[in-house]
Length: 243
Image (cartoon, helix red, strand yellow):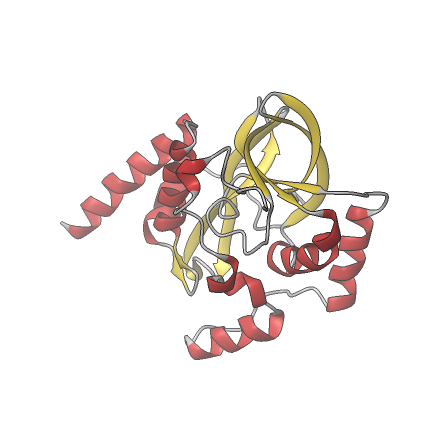
């Protein structure tokens, strides 16, 4: 029998969207453009051409063989859109989850009301989860993964050292690309709160993104004080907006 992929983190068994139900399983520039038109949003996202994205995937995976670990720190945790055979708690030393990616393209914010998402940046260490993709489907699943995470600029696909249940490993992840003007390492707390409180788009609200990140981390015993404090401040800001 196939081993239960949730055997190490049973708390997430009913908290992760099945791949077949995920928008990201079949995401493409064409589908996003159609969704933008349907929602009456401008088509201004700087999509990578397919050959550019595939070249980035080939470069990132060059030399890799066998099963693949993917380190997740944000929405990949609850909506990976991937077929995986194992899921573990993981730690990425030297990195940090930071809410510094500003969205103005319609996903979770617009130019009139920007949204906010997380990126993996340098720091004192980041706790998240790692998905293991079986070797025989790595090509198929990473093609889907790159259409989702590398649909355009913003992230750098890199292997980083991680600890998976305390054991050293290498995992593919998506780091903050500081060359992208929407990656804002200098963002103020007031801007983070405002964007998280009001940003919305066809993927949902920035508030839900933040709340889902905090709640799914909590399911596996991870407390990120920065994310938790940002969520508390954002809840308070949303309450004031309703007054």
